[in-house]
Image 1 (cartoon, helix red, strand yellow):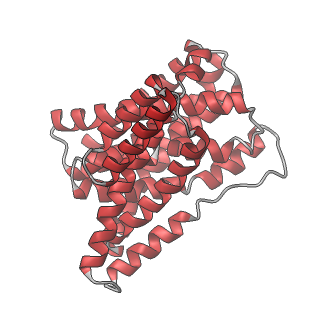
Image 2 (image 1 turned 180 degrees about the vertical axis):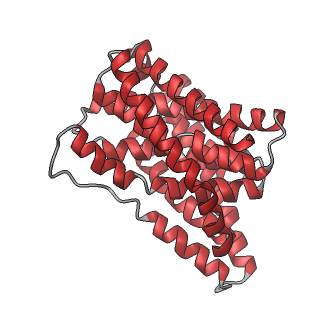
Length: 306
């Protein structure tokens, strides 16, 4: 009976997410609470689905952007992106040794913090031949911090009276996962959403050089490097919108659907956070991740304000 009720509840939340009844933070909380109250009946499917839905959502958001603005935004965030990645990777390298943390776990958490959360961890883990438990712990910690960021960042943004441009850039650099970056910016404003999405996706491309660096760092060879091809579709969507290939009514519908699909994605992310894995990892990995996150958040905010 409980299993049936959990399935009904699961699909009910999916329905209200797609209908636009709930927002991004609520969806994430519902997913997390659902996992605490019930056992997710579709864990494997949820994990695969949110990766796919996130990519579709991002491509859909491209239909609300214009090529000239996108190029300008990417250029504005380039220096900060390069600097933040370099400093985070350097701090992570030495901090993992100071805390005597498993080096592969430390590198996965650092990679997720420096670039794009779960996507970076998923891309780097086969390159360094990380064990499944190590991957689960890294993902669990990063997803938990993403959940916190979804609530903390908008609150801090309003408290400090950040402009939409400042907030969008801050989100893109300081929040780990693309889903939470877009989710946090979604409620802050359309300009913040455009800037956050553009800068975050240009940041995602750094997975490629990081994968090559990781290969040399851990002395592994012959592993396939994952390239985020969906970014190409995102760029194509921007070009289509820029040259008015489709009527505004159609592209606007794509954007609305993309935003609703993103809300669903955040519910799925919340429903796959493993409290058990996070507890089993102990305090050190969580402390390590928090220090890196606070560093990149404060550094980026000071850089933007100054």
